[in-house]
Image (cartoon, rainbow, N blue to C red):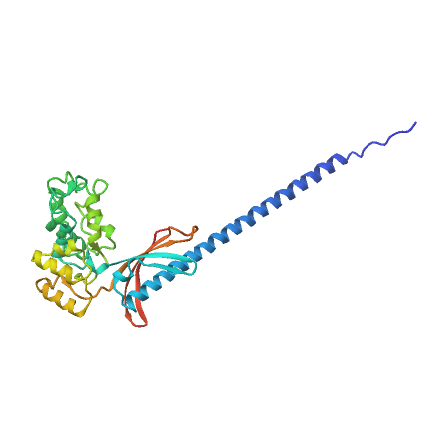
Amino acid sequence: MRILAGRPKGDGYILISVLAVVALLSGLVAALLLVGRAAVDTAGLESRALRREALLQSAVTVVGYQLFVLKRPEEAVNGQQLRLGEGVVSVTVASEAGKVDLNGSGKELLEAAYTAAGLRSSSSASSEISSTQALNAESFASRVIAWRSAGGQTGADTAQASRDPGLGPGLGPGLDQGLGHGPRNGPFRSLDDLRFVAGISAGAFERLRPFLTVYNAPGRLSAFSAPAALVAALPGLSAGTLRELLSVRQRRSAASAQRLSELLEGQASLIDTAMPRTYRVGIEIHADERLAGRRLTVVLSAGATADWPYQVLDWTDGG
């Protein structure tokens, strides 16, 4: 009788070990594939980021060259679509010299900005900003000046604001139930600082924004680029003079500059005919699905020398 030999007792253990090793190797391969895919994705993201950065940098350079080397007027550059390599960008340009500077402009121009924003009185304000009814152009200007004055003023103006009728208890409604603070006794670092001035509501802030800046250090307005509503709010300017001024300034020439100087002789301390030296430039990428919609806002100002025709004062990446 034949006796069949049984399997070695270790075979089951060996089989299990082999399966475990195979499973481990499979896991390692899967992990390596995931790492490789992540590396490829990361490289792709980095490549797109570099392309985007290069496209935006190129657009800024082209716009800066047009404004400060070729000295093209802002209306000739505003609205351009530039093809740069494989990308297309659209450009908007607006002079900062046509706005009232929170740090450099005087009381009369600050009052004019408040008036131009349509905040003359509660009857001209929308319900959204009706809480500012006690804040008039004069008190707005005085609060801005108190905020920026280096140790020259105390919180007296803010204390007065707290007593203004219609502003409620404390420092008034402002933004988010009132962000009214005492004077900073230092310059406004950005327009957003204005939200902290007593009595400035969220609605009033948005109405004031188009007329204000912190990048017009001389403080005077450019007669060529100031909004019509802001020019109209200047003291001592008749309706007839305003109409002629708005017509004459459309022609950029020495003769038009001379005529503007004559028309604005009584407002020479507030507005001048010098060409703008600072611009806010908006750039948006188009024609590339992976980069489309990306935005950038920069503030460009004239440089000190021909070798350095312009400088970047602010660079805000909109994503």
